[in-house]
Each structure stands twice: as structure tokens, then as C-alpha cells.
Length: 557
Image (cartoon, rainbow, N blue to C red; front, top):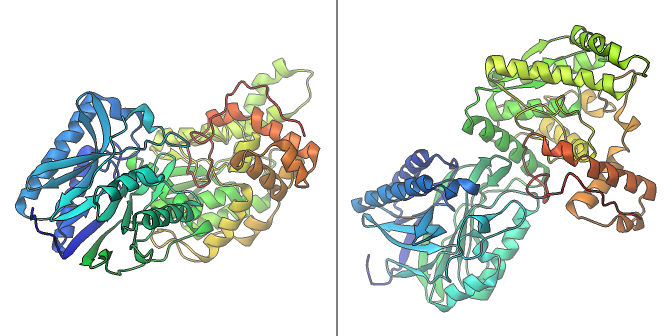
């Protein structure tokens, strides 16, 4: 490495999709990215947080064998840099003495040159890094080709301490590897933090984020560069892998990134839809399922899930099954068939009357003298769930479940029935957003979607009153408030944790709010047994919101 300051530096950003635990595969991906960056003339390639291991790691990173395999892969990649090609900044777990760190390592000249460790370990929401990593010491800059580069890791920029330390110790520019998951509000939040750090430090900043799905999290990429004057020099796309070369020049006032491509970002409902598709795709692909199967009811939720599945995997890997009973209307049968035809998927009809009636007959002696109620309704749902799981067992396809966040909130779903499945792309979408996304998908789809363009859901599927069709003339609003009211209350209870009294003060009926709050609380045992699903809101059910199942606390207005 030259000791003389450079006038120019070519840095490639690798916005890629690693797989947790696939150390060998991630090493191959890193080598391919480095080779591509070398062809572009890069002198340095920046990968994302914990790239070699995948992110997030949870307790997997505590296994000594896993730590050793990550170190060996980093050392193998370091040997590649003896070829005179670009150096590498890459994230990996890294043991130093008796402590394990979330590290970024500079690889150059055939060796691991130096390491920097993440200081601020997040321990809120979906993050639990204090459980597995030790916090690093305050970092100084990394010298590279005569340039002093600050390399804070992800959360390190969310408070000013680490950046202040890097600026005071002579950093000239900031390169930030990130594992920042998507949520609808994330772009404003990231940009506000980045601008604040640029203003405080007077340094240009590159924010490089991973992309792809990992269980319930989706990482959206959307990497960007801000110059010291806060101007946006580079914007990489969201929900797509990219390797982007950037050109940096030293001016009298400091380093500056030359303006490059600024890709438009998908925002709001479009971003949520793209996140759901990516999350489902990567869950299926990374767990090596050949495809998916789902119950297509003729309703809005299953229609949207079918569209997402086809966009994620292609029509040939999606199997839709209509499971009609005597309460299934002709309208539902024709709507389900129309959705299947529009999407081009395999579509089978498997009537369930004989199975349901056989179960009722078996139970009749025990139930004698008791009126029919939700028990018999749930038999229908559980027969459907069992048949779908049997199809999954026979053909290997994963069952995709279709319950939305409104249903998950209120317990309006049947355990071991319509809740059966391996993954749920709608789990963090309220019913009102399901309607919006159906309209959206009929006029637009993500650039990488594999499904057909144009309308894929008949208008009647979207506009007809929602119903589970478990009894004659049933409608969802027989059991639930209108969805626009219900979702507004749930948003305040779940996302904002507003007291019941404050919600009532906003004009909502006190009895209704208390009822919704009770449904939310008593359904926790169902949510604990629900399939994982894509996180798109600020507070999903699961790691974001950890409530006890046994819980007698109730609020009053």
C-alpha cells in the first residue's frame, strides 16, 4: 500500500444477497463480486455486514466450528488479494482472544491487514446482538492507499459517538457496511441519520446495505452515497442485487464522490409488495423447496398470496387448490378459477364434504345434545389444512398460508386449519392494505417479478364482502368491526402502543376499543404457533413484539 495520499480512489459497493450459514457459497459470491469489480477497475470492494457468514446469525454464531469456518473463509479470500487486484472490506464474526466481535476486515496484499469491530450492538426490536457479540473499542480510521477510511458498522452511525471518534482521529471518508432490514418508514429514518452524521463530521458517507430475505426479515439494499455537502451522489436500487463502481476524488475541501446513477426507489405500497415477494422467494429458495401449494378460496387474501407466489417463483412452481364445502358459493368457485387462469398456475378442486361429515359423525356421540357452533365451522378449516399439508408431504412443496395481520391480531383464524403452513407473506399486512395491494398488483409489478403483467385478480375478488364461508351467508363483519375501523384501532394498539384511553379520546367507541384490545391479548397463543412471515411494519408479531401468552392485564378507557 502506498504511503502517499491518493488523488483518486475507485471503490465498488457489493449490494448482494448472502445466505446465513452458507459460508462456502458466500465466499464464492464474494470472489465473483471481486472479479467483477476488478474488471471495472476497482481498487477496493466493500461488502455488507457479516457478509461471509450471512446476517443475522442469532445463536448460530456461538458455535466454535462456525466461527472457525468463517475465519478460514476470510483467510482464503485474503490470499486472493495477492494477485494485485482490488482490496476487500468484508464483514465476518471474528474472535480476538476470548471475545467474539462483529467485525469488518481489510484484506489486501494476500493477508488480513486489519480489523475494526462494531461498537454499538443493537438490542431492540428484531435485534439481539448483545446476546452474542462483545462491543468493540472505539475505532480509528483504516489507512488504505494513503487515505484514512472510517468504517463504522451499521448501528454505529445511529448515535454520534463512533463517528465523532472517527472524525477526531483523522478519517477522511466513511464507508459503512450494513445489515439493515426493511420496514415501510426506513428510508426517511436512514437518510435522516446519515445526513446528521455528515453534518456533524463534515465527511462524505457511503451506506452499503445487503439485500434479500432471511426468515421474517427482508433486507432491501437501497445503498447510497452522501457527499460532505449532503448532496446525494449515488443511489442504488432497492430489492435488487447490484455491484456499483464509484469514483472518489480529493479536492481542497476533502474527498468527494463523483455523481453516479441514482436509481428511483420503490416506496410505500410498492416497496411493501416487493418486500413480500422477495421474502417469500428467498424463504423458498434458501430452504430448497421445489415450490409452494396454497388454498385458493376465491377471496382476496389467497388471491394476493397466489400472485405474490407466482411473482416470486414463476407459475410452474405454484399449485393452487380449491377446497369447497356446501357453504362455498358459486361466486367463490368462479373467482378462484379466474385467478388461477390469470396467473397460469396448476389448479385443482378437492371437495371436502365427505371428510367433514366423517369427522362430524365420529364426534356425534360425544357432542350429542349440544348445539352446532364454531366447533363444526373449524372442522372445515382443519380438513382443508390437513389436505394441504398432505399435498405438501407427497410432493414436497411448502404450504403457504394466507392470514393477514388483522386476523392475526384478533385471532380470527383457526389453529391447525387455515393457519397451517410454512410461511406467510401477508402476516404483517393489515386487511385494508391487502385490498390496496390487490389494486396495485393489477396495474403494476416489480421489475424482477416472474408473474404476468396486467390484471391478475378479477375486480369482484377485491370488492365483494370478505367471508370465511364456514356457515350460510357468513361475512367477516359478523364477527369483526369494519376493517377500516378495526385496522385503525389495531395500528394504535400494536404499532404505537397507545393506551386505550388515548384511542378513545381520538373518537373511537370505548366498548369497541376494549373489545379489540381483549381480542388482541387473548390471541397471543395463536400467534406463537403461526408461520413466520415477512416484516414490513415497524412492529411485527414475533421478535418485535414479545408478549406473554399467560397475561391477565387489561386496560380500561
